[in-house]
Image: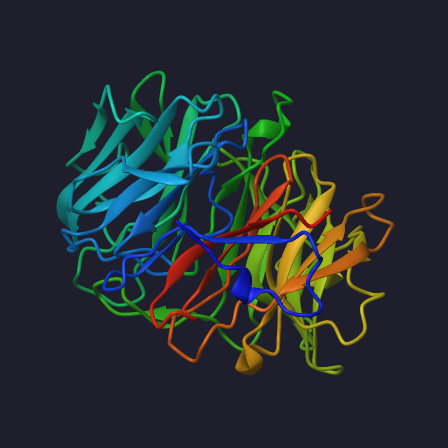
Length: 410
């Protein structure tokens, strides 16, 4: 680690502390994508990765490692994985294990292995090896999505994949749900437009709510026969849905798809609640806003025109909103977000969440500029510790992508 108070400026809170967590000059490192469940519930340890980029890693990179950062012990970094192809990390809700996948798949074949290891690096176990078609199908997963998501009772974990056989373009993608108790897997959703699913289990502890998974649909996407995406979003843009982890109760979020508002492609649950937040681009005003809603019954891919939709523009009191990525604490009371202009290094803000569905963000606090450069993939991707006391972001201000922490804003 390295103390980086030089990243503060005249507008930063006076007590702000800035720490660069990764410092290898020749190896890029970053936080895992900000919607990932990579914190222990006590907010003391977080998983990040080396030899990686802001959206994942190369499955053929032998140098890639997931690391646990001990925030109470000098932010020390300890490797948790050594396997080539390790991907899709999720920390168990009790903070005891890191679950992850080892991707040795190829189009139409290969092997996907689900493993877990204790957060101290001991007790590594192989839980499931998938080297045959998914049960009840002819599909073999490949192009494994870099993010997994784990249910709040620790009994199921989900990850997305390409399902084509390599012979035709436009083949389906799908959502795989692994039962961690019975050691089985089920395909609960599939189709050609599910190429960038961003699956996110609800953080609720309610027995019914915890089964909900937030998913992203990319209408008009195109991919080649190997599952490589050649066009991510069509003119109508993405829309967001909620589905039960058995494939039932498909619902819609009232966002985007009216020709004026477009989902940017990042959304997350508001803490443990049934509310979710998305970032939008609004053509008529050239604004980039944050909107929260709850799911409604699916009556077609109507986006914000979905019948019964309730929308709350969280950023309506911010002058010229230009927000992109964000995350909340586990109680859904605080939000951290990055903001443009990126050509000037970007900005990082903290805000309070008020009454769900009604109140706007309040008490906006400017923290600092991450000073990101123009390098491809240098995304800030901010998120909070579960207790909302520490913020995390990426930057390439040193000349290479690294992971950072900020705290002490109160």
